Amino acid sequence: MADRTRSAELFERACQVIPGGVNSPVRSFRSVGGHPYFVARGEGAYVWDADGNRLLDFVQSYGASILGHAHPAVVRAVGDAAARGTTFGAPTEGEVLLAEAICARVEGCDQVRLVSSGTEAAMSAIRVARGFTGRSRIVKFAGCYHGHSDGLLAGGGSGVATLGLPDSAGVPAQAVADTVVAPYNLVPDLDDRVACVIVEAVAANMGLVPPVDGFLEGLRVACDAVGALLVFDEVITGFRLGEGGASGWSGVRPDLWCFGKVIGGGLPVGAFGGRADVLSVLAPSGAVYQAGTLSGNPLATAAGLAVLHELDTGSYAALSARVASFAASLQDVLNGALATAGRVDDRGRPLVALVPVVGPLFGLFFAPMGSGPVRDYGGAVASADTGVYAAFFRAMLARGVALAPGPYEVAFPSMAHGEPELEHTLDVASEAIADALAG
Image (spheres, rainbow, N blue to C red):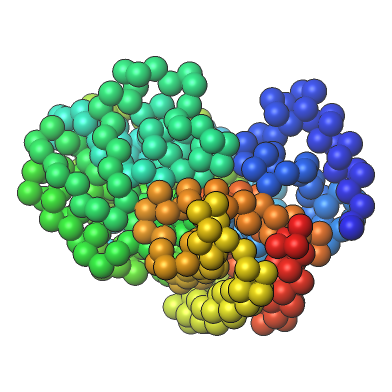
């Protein structure tokens, strides 16, 4: 067992001055047990904790670091930008360059506005949709997480689900009165009160749940029929699934997009964009107000541009192929151990491991045999409730492999995760699952 004395001490100190000891709830390890490790540095596929332990990192800042940690091109770009000044409150060329790079890669995205987080991006996209349509109602899907703004916390996945909170205290009923929550992978009935439908085109906050055939296409048709806008939340999938993100992957074009993570190269960033006529309602041109002192921060734009310049169709294809092969092998390893152990759920049904893959993303579910692929939030909850993920997480961490500390997250192999790292993970997983099931 690795010594994490220093991390334990830091967590104890953090609890005195930071609520819960963390600045984002899923980091607390509440759903997997124990205390978090504190990261001292990262390089490529690895991080080192405050006690000097090296961890093979599949978190990668929840998808922000697609090239791996401390990539030389990103470090150089940020250093050069910082030497010129860190923030100005005035336009910079970097904002233009990053906006051009995003629009060039995402077909149908005419314009983007940069913000500082994915939460801001989703919140602002909803405001634009309401301003453009003159309507108030929005439709989202159970288990999809679109940041922590009041109106979008209804039926959220990710950290909200991990902590067992149905929504959130502190959110008044009137804040979600115009939010309709529908089951993921089912096209809802819409009417002319709906301003927009917002969806994770590939759900990645209730584990990895791909859209079933016809779901995204059905949303496009349903929105068009009533004059509502379709919003793709691509904070995770944008520039992660490929150069065109989930809209390029699926062939379905929304009216608005939300971006984040990859486009900031590991620095705080977000963006929302879409059709020029829709975005024309934004101030200063239109009546929908949105602003941000640090929006378009020169360090973030420099880092984001450096990342996008390193990515091309070939690099995405190579990483996706590695992850697909790895995920199939991991599923075999885990199911062999589950069968040997005879693990069943609380209804006596044998458990199986499911390792879904979309592009370079993979998820992990421990589900009842015969239940089929996880298609919605209910299936994700049933998998989490088996408790196997938490035990497996702890066993993997003890062997130096860091997965996300919650069963509703996905894994983010980076371009730095080569065959040696993935082969090592399979070797470790074989031991870890045996220990997790024995315990």
